[in-house]
Amino acid sequence: MPSLTLPDIAPLLTWYPTAARDLPWRKTKDPYRIWVSEIMLQQTRVEAVIPYYFNFLDYLPDVAALAAAPEELLLKLWEGLGYYSRVRNMKKAAIAVMERHGGVFPRTYEGIRALCGIGDYTAGAIASFAFDLPYPAVDGNVMRVVTRLCGYGKPITDPAVKKEITAAVAAAQPKDAPALFNQAIMELGATVCLPNGEPKCGECPLSPVCAAHRAGKETDFPQKTKKAPRRVEKRTVLLLRDGARVALVKRPAKGLLAGLFEPPCLAGFRSAEEIAALFAAVGLTPLRVAPLGEARHIFTHIEWQMTGFEVILPEGAAAKLDTCAAFLPNGLFFADREELEQRFALPSAYRAYRAFI
Image (cartoon, rainbow, N blue to C red):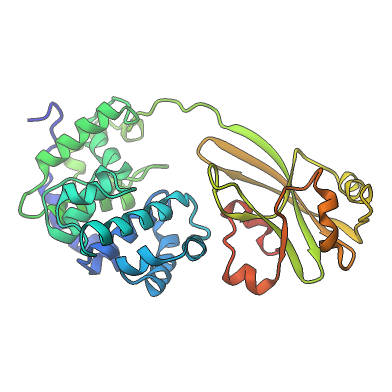
């Protein structure tokens, strides 16, 4: 038995069938579709995922289609979801399924867990939801529920603590209903035992056996270690226009937002006068430099603070931009509206400027 033991969770299993949200991936046992949903749901709200889920499956309905998909299409289908390494890893995993498993998604936990980009949680979710295998699926929602149920005060950011919680969840999981149990405890965390603000203890089927609720200390759990402060980067975003076309540059193949397209940016905050002077110095005096406002985007370890400007260049200026290499990124090119909508994936970091783009 694990050192951490959950109380009786039987009421949870009768609560779930009537309380569960109607979500499309809960209507299938297809491991491919469950996998797609689980990867999309990492770091992303359910409401945001649903349209992406349907669109992705329209273009890539099975493992073979995903394995053969060009990266440009993958990034476009993922545009706005963020954490693009997720979809790149999915393609690697799909290729492995085609090459090592004859195109058939693995039916064992070990086989699923061995695929690129799939960790313990995702492997447990797919194994239980698709194949009814008795494996736990412990995500942030589940850890929050468990720490509150048990009044468990160790920091969940500690890998050893997550292992202890996972062992406790595995011990409590009914072997004849692993999918029901996993879905139910995850749903409780997502809709009732909420992470921000007061949890809805009056709607919780486990409140009578919840240690945190009995002590009136629900929001004291879970405990987390403090994160290091994010590094702040100041950027000036330039929407360069040559007629109806807008300038883009491809980010490096490795690192943050690898391989995605973005408007050219300058380090630091620049004024309209400074920007106009940079172009004028190389003989490309802009017709207009107009402010587009400020924006902020937070990554895990970095915060971008941005100010944007629309820079309308003289007709034909695109052919002369190599003269601006001293201050503009290398590889800059111009794209029209159709290419922006159909081909090039822009990071959600630039959401505030998308309407102008």
